[in-house]
Length: 124
Image 1 (cartoon, rainbow, N blue to C red):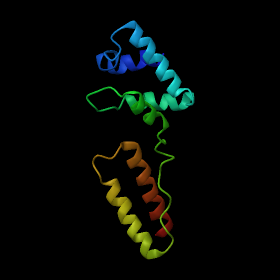
Image 2: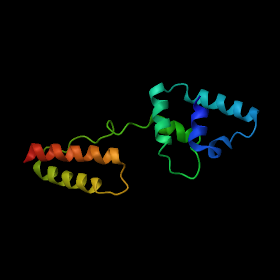
Image 3: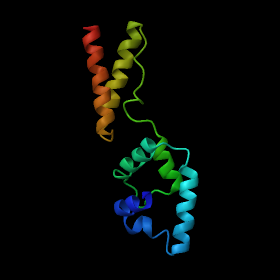
């Protein structure tokens, strides 16, 4: 099933790696073995991230595994800044600079903006 989905996302970029039925079978076995310890949720996360994949090539097994085990954005949010006032201001500026990055993913940018809003609410 995974190979069908990845084939539909990447077409020849993925399916071209398995030119014969024997190579396809060997590839499926290897992927199954290497991904066996991952949960269905992690596999789904990897598939979802493949839809945003920007490389010229489809992800290989190690790329796909990394996509699966990467931490979701909402879990990956940084902890609140330190309590000392001087450091709070410095940390706030760092968050603002990060949020202004045009290459930042929309979900992560939204999480950072929520953190900045909480800071404003708490310290104003």
